[in-house]
Amino acid sequence: MKANDIVLCALFAALMAVGANVSSFLMIGGVPVTLQLMFAMIAGGLLGSRLGALSMTAYLFIGLAGAPVFAQFKGGPASLLSPTFGFILSFILVAYASGKILENRHKKTAYLFAGIAAIFFNYMIGTNYMYAAFKWWADAPDGFSYAAAWSWMAAYLPLDLAVTVLSLAAIPKIQAALRHRGLKSSNSQKVM
Image (cartoon, rainbow, N blue to C red; front, side, top):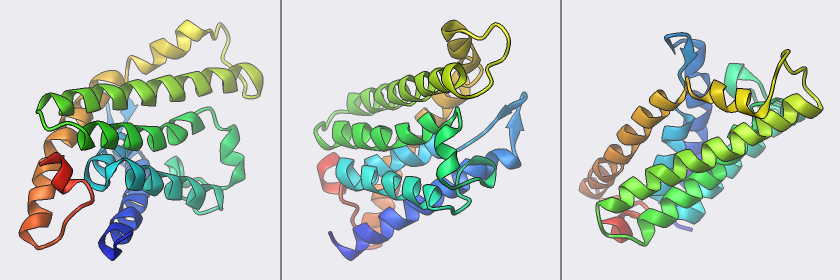
């Protein structure tokens, strides 16, 4: 790994901590806003699949070690029992998938596929983990079902779609800015 890549991995692990806690300050229509999906996708797009996933894995282990980097400034091994921990796990695959798609494609449609993959993996892993947590170890609300878990996610979908579009639009601009300053991300030559 190059020193630049190590710094960018650490930067994205830190940005995930900030993105997790933006919701403490910003709500839109009662829905908390986080920037984690955005940072996971940009990490994959800039760093590539391997380093992007590594930066999200570093974020995960920093939180599990006890640093208050997860949403609502939480951290520690007890986070594994949180119904929303599946979303944290999903960011590793989000970064990997979006990075892999953008590494291997030179067409603009690659950005569309990277966005679809990111939302798909985020929702599939996160929502299924949430459902399992509520069914097996967390206190599920009355009438909770698999359909209810997915209906809860409907409130987040418009925001996640907007964040996905912004993220994918930002990746080439960030790569161009890095190249202009004489820096290269791991994925910049492959995507451009």
